[in-house]
Image 1 (tube, helix red, strand yellow):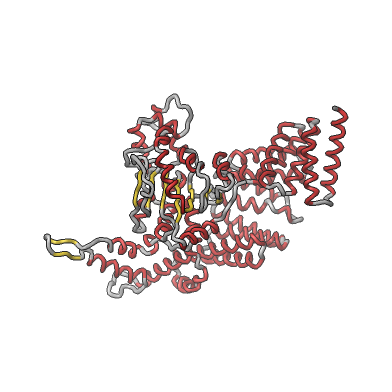
Image 2 (cartoon, rainbow, N blue to C red):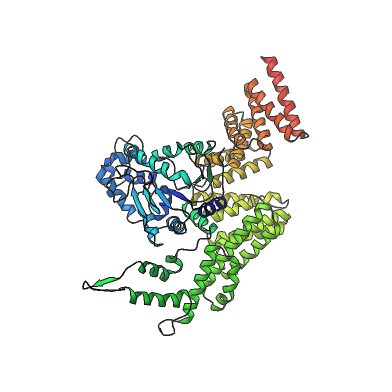
Length: 636
């Protein structure tokens, strides 16, 4: 079973490592550069196949994958093709915030299978100039030869002599990569970000017996990793952990905030950044004799800008600057700093000044602060069903809307918080307000799939209230269909649709049409990564088992049993999974007259009774299974 960790646990480890003068390696895959404008490997393969210039080389492909396409493309054109993307890529959150963590000593080595220069550029923006190691171009590798801070290119650089694109090229460089990891992981944690595990580097990682300070694999959102990665993460005693719920940018942003690392000066204090850059420039020699500080005059300008803008002293001797605009700019920067570091209690220091200013941009940042504050409170309150904390979150969301009435995120979050609160206190009136807020978010951001999903998710919970009409469920289905159209790759959309149709089937005596729609959507969810989400797997199994029983379709019942097996292995003490797994096996016995299948069902019901010895439903199911076994024995 995969061990999971939270971003908070990783932050705690990084703080402890730093205190012990240790650090971590950040291992970047293609996913880290995607939002910067560099396509993923599969996307590059599709581009090559349809490329006006290079498409003619894509004949007799063994498959349509990246490695096959690159093998067909002449080596000289590979570099030329990739440069179209690596040279135009723009630094994203993942790289810039990774650089901020390097500057603060939480990370000292970046290893990457990407060719782009994004990490080196990002480090330069925090005035760090790393040691760069190109393992593809290195003839050999000396243990202890890596000086930090460093960036190690495992497959080569965009401008280097070598880039490893084909399988044989990657295998050629495997020795250097193996030596690199062996030398670096003795006293470091490793964070794997944006990496699919689909190249020979993964084989090297998987051969490492134990990661002494842990390997933290950052999954993409809640998508299940591929089977090889799952097997690797499940291996006992390797100290591997999976962190879910992020993409590369949101993960680095979240980790930066958890570690309370300030926003890089290039964004928050640009003149201080310039000053730091200027201060590394030495004296210039004039005519071979006199040495002077060539940057003195420029530094005076920069210092004036620091005093005027960043420290808020104004420019009394510079009439071209408006004091009011300068003060507003300072308020905005303070608001950004509060938001970046989550120092919510400091918002009162600037709130009145921002309100008096009437500046829309400044008020927008206040709205962002309150929305983020509310989200943090809501997540904590929902975890423990803490009503006062959820109420406090609701207040913050309302405050956010007060400052920016068109902030759809605040309406969506307010609706979710109100809905959760309504369900806990059993208030249909508050629940209806929740739906109104979510509908408002829907109006403001009709082309955003998540607002449709959030509204549908809350509408799907309407049956908890007796007086709720079936029209709510129709509205939920309509919104999910819209979400599907906007973003067809999100398994949670299909999973929720499947769940809604399954619940409707239950309310209508397991109506076949509703069951069929449930099974269809669950299948779509499973295809898109839902197999790593146990609730989706369990609900899909229930839908297939019921449809298979109603239609007397043995294949569907067997599919249900296979899914229950996955859910059971992940949660072997979950009573609902145990009982429904047993029920599916009992039903299969009716079709197949298999004693082995019936015995498995009996074992599961007996296990269920250990958890709930007086549960009459399980007692009846066990009795029925034993009776079926007797009949099968008589027949045989």
